[in-house]
Each structure stands twice: as C-alpha cells, then as structure tokens.
Image 1 (cartoon, rainbow, N blue to C red):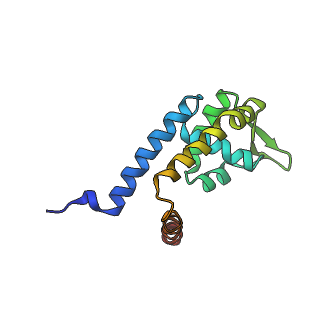
Image 2 (cartoon, one colour; image 1 turned 45 degrees about the horizontal axis):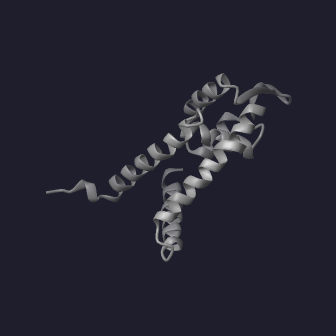
Image 3 (cartoon, helix red, strand yellow; image 1 turned 120 degrees about the vertical axis):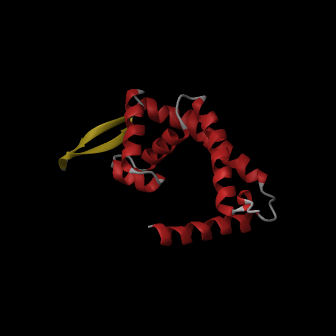
Length: 145
C-alpha cells in the first residue's frame, strides 16, 4: 500500500501548516495575522514599495497582498500614497502606529519564534539543514519561476 504520509511533499506541507498555525497564533496576540506581519516586515524594509513588489518578496499573488493591505489600512497600520512620479500608482507605507507595532511587538515575536524553530534542530546539523533548505529553494525557484 502507498504511504503518502512519508512523501516529502506531504511532510513539508504538513510541517509548514503546523509552523504557520503556531506563528499565526503568536501574531494574533497583537491583532494581526502571520501573513499581515510579513507585509508589515516587508514594508519596514522597503518603505514606499508597490503591491506587486511586496507580493514577489513574500511569495503571494498581488490580489492576496491587496486584501492583506486593505485590512492593514483599516487598522491604521499601513497607508497607500500616490506615487509623485506616477499618480496612477500607489506606494505602500507604514503608519506611525504600524511602525510602533512592528518595532515593539512583531519584531520581537518573530525573532523569538525564529529562535524557537532553530532550537528544534540539533546544532550539529543546523548548518546542513539550512543548506538543504537553500538547495531545495534554489532548485524550486528554477522550476517554478
């Protein structure tokens, strides 16, 4: 009989969902979802960016990112501003409230969660594990992109 639960694609998907649920629960303590936190982090690093560029960097499609931004705008965490060079284009910026939430709550949560995830992997093989993740990512980018 075929045991699909040992397929790497199944295991990686199941682990990804479990990790996402844990991280999402931590983010929800501060009023945002995990996906919204990734938008906020991206805008922190790329102030005045476009929806399309955010979508590319956080690996979601533009309509999904637009929905996340809509909710963040309603919460006064992000704002859309006209691009002075192209009035048809909108640029995404953090509001002071969004910057404060990111700096004081979301960044510490993300760093703590990343440290927790890294602590699960034995330090003797952590470098190998990171290398394997990088290789898989690199190969899949060639195939999908």
